[in-house]
Image 1 (cartoon, rainbow, N blue to C red):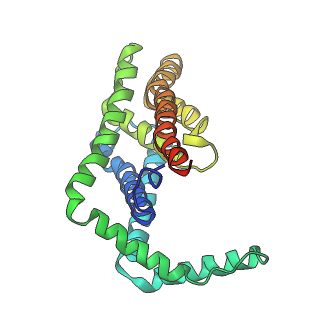
Image 2 (tube, rainbow, N blue to C red):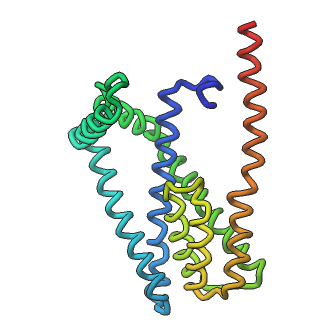
Image 3 (cartoon, one colour):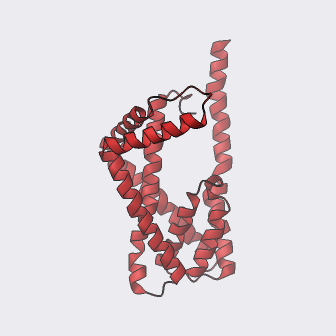
Length: 232
């Protein structure tokens, strides 16, 4: 859709990749903000283990990401490995030859994309999750539950990590089950946890879908319709 709208393909790929990397990095770093809740004590062991796991994953991914961004050799090695596996699996297709160089080139493009606008990019990523977390707090307040915000943040971070599992679109099913369970561990009653979870997912997942469909229809009419007129 971005390419059809006139954005160069390479810039579209680099921009989307940079956006996703920043978004994932912020959600993985959010458990750091819950440290005061951990220091106060009273945290369920399962919730504590989930938080520690999230912090460990953040440290590991941060280290790997830093290496890939700073050094060419590891990135080229990944490219060669993926390229070799792909060519072996798809023997009948034309072999890929330049994947390592393309990865380095796109990495540099991502750095250039974020570059001078890193403050705006980081602010947008943090704001996206801050509003998402505020939506969950509002859903809990709407059902009459007021648990400690720090514990809710731990439950929120765990649910967002589940959403990154590439099994269902948007973590559908995984987020609902995980968030309900972690909210219960945070001291929310089961009934309130279920209601708040469904209200939260309604606002953050289901409500934008019709808007996205409406945008896709407008996009199709504007750009694909214009292409057909030009071709005719």
